[in-house]
Image (cartoon, rainbow over all chains, first blue to last red; front, side, top):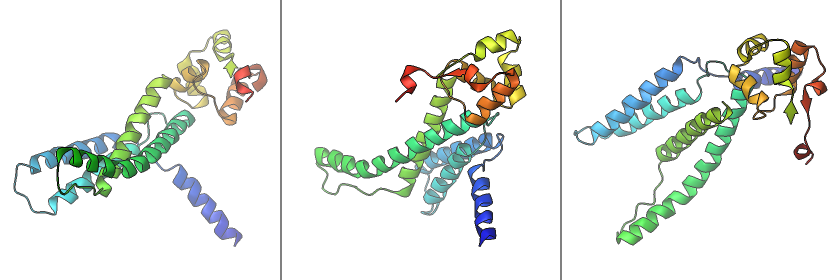
Length: 145
Length: 68
């Protein structure tokens, strides 16, 4: 039993410190931008239905790679700033998921639409959370300089 | 919390960059601590204390605003 608890502890310690190398930031950025551009291009080209969710997932993977890549010097201040930005992203993501359908409904009602779209896709929420995290992380870093 | 890091660094004629390298953090972290924008962990405070050869409470000081 003690061995299992010790193994769990080691695993959690490793998970807590898991980050991709700094060079992966550019890889993530390239993937996210390429997927975003292809999503825009797709609107003007007739593509099969499965392309849209695939591009959305690729964009999410790109943003996630940026989010979990190390800074040039990853020290305790960076870890603290990162934790704060994840906290804000989580709370704002939940609020966004709750409020956004009502906003859609309100806008549709104002425009007189009969079938307002109040659905919330996982892509919308996750992309919102990742972008909020990245923006706040950058902003906090700038505030510390 | 305030600190005497900048003064101690000046006494030892150390740049932020050099101090950061010695204790394994970024220059920005040293800058943020000196300006009071970041409160270091106990480990980092002890590393700074060892670097300057002074007790932690001679480097860092509580302020009235830290009491609550």
